[in-house]
Image 1 (cartoon, helix red, strand yellow):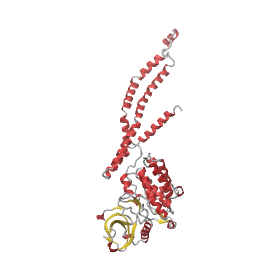
Image 2: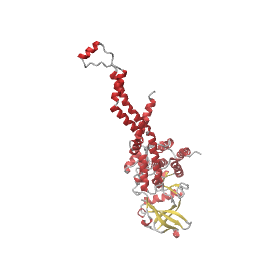
Image 3: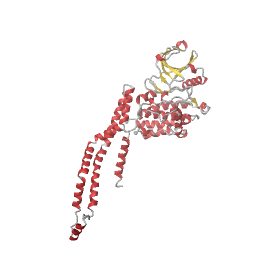
Image 4: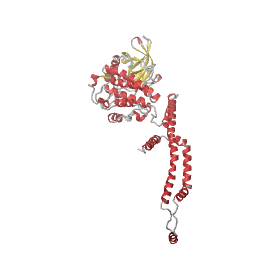
Length: 467
């Protein structure tokens, strides 16, 4: 028990040193700040090399002088000069004193470690400064440069790059092999400049394109409002499965009236093409925000999670499972209200049980284990995908990366890294929430979104700033 405080201090220093192994800039900062330790080390070294042997010898001789010599001992000394007449403890004490001198190196070590804590705090403050600079960076290159600097100075793991650098995955469905990408109006050939009866919808510009369709911004001339119009691409118009999926998305949205689900206004045919008229979401996607921020604060992420889960609960209450929850499908209004979109592969609970076994639909990076295995899915699969989305909001990256096959395998066999292992300041409640959302077995997850919302709202109140 006497040595426990000492061992605790040593363990603490060793833990701090581990943080510096991969941080050469912080290590340099620490060593340069310990000027007293360097000076003490030089003085101790000079003393040990130049003066310690003679000082220790003189001290040992003074404390343990040779005993008085009798006539017999003097005669023995004449005939046997090699026989020692020193005090029997003199040499042992001399080596003990010399060892104690070597122990003087503890002084510079103590001074060195006394600078460790302040150096770590200074480095973390520097990292926070670079993180704040990244948030207001004028362009992507500067943002990435600041984030990299934050990573170099941080003594806690930080995402080194925004999510969009290497973690975007393609859909496994052969008919939806392209991710939604931004396109420029001048490069996209518009197949119609006006759509609908009496040319009601005047196309303004193309907004985005994916493997299934193109989304345009248009003016509703009858109601004088801006809308979004999704067109089923020409090469999919003769594909019965794609047409059915397009209609199912419209029907799903039409039956969902919720502030956190995109509203649909109309489904029409024009020039043998299917068009879906929807609410215009001009605030970008959650994927855009993750790229811009790098990662969310815990309070902001939990608030957003609560809104998304609220919309998802409305879909589930109508027996609709989304099956493709991901940041690209969470869109924002101009005022920043989050809404769930793209119900293109959503199914009712009854339809899901009839889905062909082994058919994998969705985005690999966000698939539940049962979905990745081509098994039947239910509401709990959406909860898992929402958990992956939360993980990405809080870290800026996906838990599983690699080829499509590798990612699907990892979803089935590997646990996601603990959030607290990437962000040390993670609240325990958030860590537990995410772990339960990402359980491999559906029976061990939250069984419905209502149960999830109860846990989320409790955490939200805990993270709210105190008045």
